[in-house]
Amino acid sequence: MNSYEEVIRRKEKIKQMGGPKAVERQHKSGKWTARERIDYFFDPGTFTEVGMFVKHRTTDFGMDKKDIPADGIVVGYGRVNGKLVMIASEDYTSMAGTFGEYHGKKFSQAIDMAVDMGIPFVGMNDSSGARLQEGIIGGQAYCWLFRSQILASGIIPQIALLMGPCLGGQAYHPVMQDFVFQCKNTGFLGIAGPAFVKAQLGEEVDIEALCGVESQAVKTGQTHLVVDDDRDCLDKTKEILNILPPNNQEKPPVIDTKEDPLKIIPELDDLAPEEIHIPFDMHEVILRIVDNDYFFEILKDFAPNAIIGFARFAGRPVGIVANQSTWLGGVVNCDAADKIARFVRFCDLFNIPVVTLEDTPGYMIGSDEEWKGILRHGAKMLYAYVEATVPKITVVVRKSYAGTYAGMSCKDTGADFMVAWPNARVTTVSAETAASVIFAKEIAAAPDPEQVKAARFKEYRELIENSWQVAERGYLDDIIMPRDTRRYINMALDVLENKKVTRRWKKYSNINL
Image 1 (cartoon, helix red, strand yellow):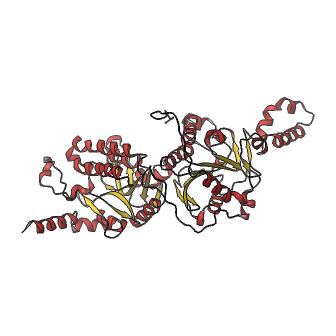
Image 2 (cartoon, rainbow, N blue to C red):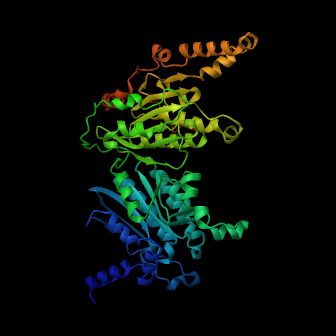
Image 3 (cartoon, rainbow, N blue to C red):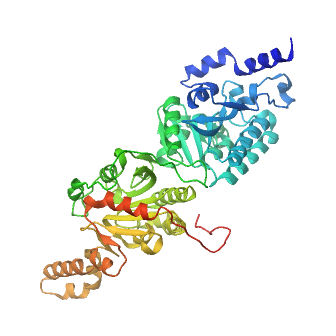
């Protein structure tokens, strides 16, 4: 056999991965193989593999006789919708995709290469965890991977796909990336699987409850998007890559959405109830003002009192932050603050303007949130908005009270432009609360306390609890008709297109983590 034939033979053997039986088990579990995922993800004929012939070098516990094709991970680059993307796809059919020394080296080097090339990185996670036969030698590779992705953070977008299990120390890897997509029936994320939990703590829990989508997408907020299966996961990944720039030196891609940027939307005038205590779905505002009713929402199931996601205005990708009054009245609690802050920081890192739609009574009060550290969590929003140098536009749809007036990007905490709808209330606290404190003695001493209370409430609302006083001081740029919201945002984005901000040098802020 000549050398040409030997190359072909070896490549074909490696491409068989764990063999027909292992591939069949993979399919029966509802998953594609690592190479099937790659074939579907990349534009036909554009994928180039790197490190196909890499082999482990462990000899203990019979590993010297163990063949692990490509060391259980396929690495390479290609084009996705015409744009270059780097991937690492774990192969569960080859020794359960276990994470060993050279498996981890390939993974980390792929991220380093993506940084050098200035292209996004996508990790397709499907591994049972650490290769225990290698001990800390394999664990060393976690350190390489963590270091690579942390140093890449803010330089290139990083997307983690939970298409199978991702357990143990390896589970830190996805949550440190920018976005985590989780297959609802096959994706699992946890610092320890059920067997380890039972062995060390005696706790009986199944993998779905411990590491499934209810745990990570709803309770912890570590999964940004729940998807149906491998196909849906890869489709959604292609979708978000169409929104993001390839790196932090470039602007996100602008497309022709064939939508009039100055379109007037009359139905917005009657959409939000004038009574601020009546909830309404902020999605109804978002879908009307963006291009083509398109909104790529993330973290939908975590802290639903806040809405975050991507849309387009006149073809430009924009990050949207909004309060959702149908959940906890739109109040900002610890989880919502974290959700908003990290999203704003991501948008800032990758040159994506931020539009904030505000309708919140303030930060959550009470012992529960106080003891969770609402002040610390709320401060994250301040850091995120103040430090962000991208265009920032804030629209007060109904109410902006107390600390969230500052925390959700007012004129002095980051907004380039801040406007309000005519019925919006911008103040410290509601008229009922303020008047009850200011006029407490007068009300108590009055012959008819209820009559005095009602009169004082009305007086405070007319003088203070509205948008006019704030606009008169120049803290609002305008009070606009709801119908003009899309037009106003697009014109503001036009003038902010080449916004530049120069600040004093520092390593980074000591943010309230």
